[in-house]
Image 1 (cartoon, rainbow over the protein chains, first blue to last red):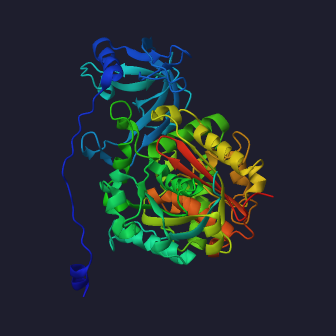
Image 2: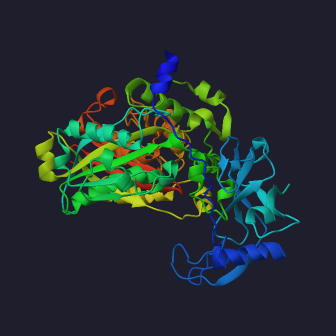
Length: 158
Length: 388
């Protein structure tokens, strides 16, 4: 009976095709990524009208909608604004494999920047982390032009 | 607005974790038929259709065309609207705009999703910048969880405050909403004991993903009055998008896009004292934590007052301003339909058709939508064409 029901029930058809993308980094991200790779420096871009500094750099100021051209170096230290210790399984869409968990996502305002970035902390014990802490970028020795590799992680400044 | 607009019909499916009984178009047709039946209309009455979902959950393109089997849009104008988590509320607003413009008299708005067809969190992650953000954003859960660490740190809110929201919404769904996906009563203790999936978010703090659809029919004033005795009049709408750079939204403890959208909708509707003027709210609360942090953006409490509001119990079904009698997003989340369900549920309240979940004497309601990189939609509805 159960067998018969399964046979006559609705079907599901599975599709497993890879769908790769080549994202163009563009002018602003390319400059940003090259500075990380070649000089271990973090660059933002400054609005000529209001003076706000955006990291990562981008073409227009969100408020003024004017083109930004002045690249400025910001600090590799900053303040942790928010975080979460992510510990549930999902597919890493960059690599098409299960995401490595747990990891601590860190939302950080770098010194000298008016916008925030997201990266990870090397601490996954939530009891040891608090919004407001000072953090520092730790660069990878083997840099490749990949933001999430060239800055390996952020560490809490004790 | 050029034309006054009222909601005359609302339909939805019985939402589920995994709907293997039918494919997308069949699901859509169930909601559409129920919406038409509720207003005693037929497809011949419909002048145009607005439909939305999030493409990457099903990897179906041209949903406006693909869905015609279910939407009834054969030989009619159809517009697809996709704005991430706010898709449903944006579909509702687009339906409203169509009628308010005077170009269409009766418009069918449809939101739907078959989330179980793919990996929801992976699909959501593709909304984040692939080069500088996607790696550590963790779908919808991660950013919402992170925002609560900022709010707790700034205002002294606790994980127990969030648990109170989770209990309220889950229990409303269990007790009052036969269409809800999750229908199990829970306790604060159970929420607190459930495992962390993304600190400080626990398993019972976060919405499910559901398969389901919702359809809402918008009509111009004359048509609305002829169709039903008591339409749900749209008095105000507000939409506000923010940056695509997610980190900028998360860094804030608050939700400025909701504050702006609420201000616009309230001005249009004449809402000056939201807590007293609203009889009921259907809010897009995708995580219990957001049920604490976003109340101030809606003007329901002072800055940092979310915990006080939630602890006082005024937002429970027996309170002064019941929030989410349907159980909201924490119980039911067919993502492209979720925002439209908020509008539909709020409409049912002011139409006096909310059945078990009816808030007695509800005349004025607010509905919200929330999406992706922290943007917001707000809708104000009333049983009257204007506020007293």
